[in-house]
Length: 96
Image (tube, rainbow, N blue to C red):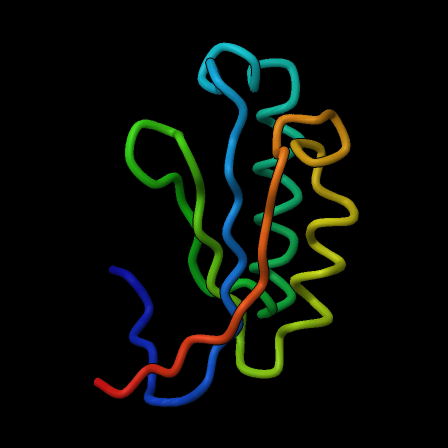
């Protein structure tokens, strides 16, 4: 069961992936998933997943999660190994 997001201001992180991401991610996938699970265990990351056919990914961080999102990017094996050419952090106002 997915977590229920209460109304409020959340932090979104969106990745744009390289072409052929499904093939290119293989050597780094386990480390990336472990990185995400650790952020979730710290209650920084609420939900995350690929968008479309692994063209991009979306990460939802807890309110006031801008610092956590920046730290996530800095240590993510996908970013470190050049699988994420662009990323952006913004806010998301959940109303319902």
